[in-house]
Length: 54
Image: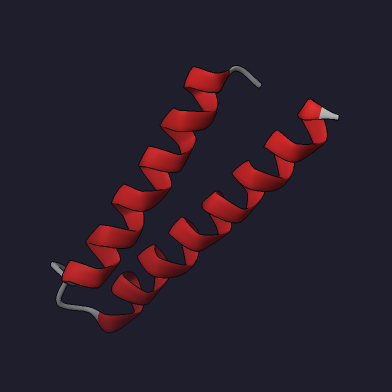
């Protein structure tokens, strides 16, 4: 995974988490889903990045 792709995935995950924190959606489950998806994306990106560097 290239460095730019890695940075873009982290940026996208942070954006999803920020959307979940701001809570723009009227339904609570959508906001929680944004937080969970952002966290999962960050974790997966870090794990994939570590595996490709070895």
